[in-house]
Length: 69
Image (cartoon, rainbow, N blue to C red):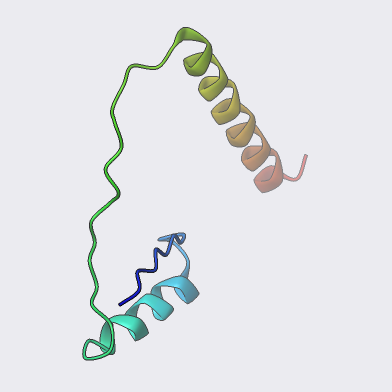
């Protein structure tokens, strides 16, 4: 037996269709929706700052692309 982890954009129609196809082959594949368990910890101030800046940049880029500025 082998394990394969698939990460996909849940908003993508193509990705959803591929997952639906794999699920329909239930006699071939066993589907488990479990997420890998990772140790939870508090973010450092620097990590929070970096995450905020990254999110801000992504939101600004998305807004600029949508408004063609």
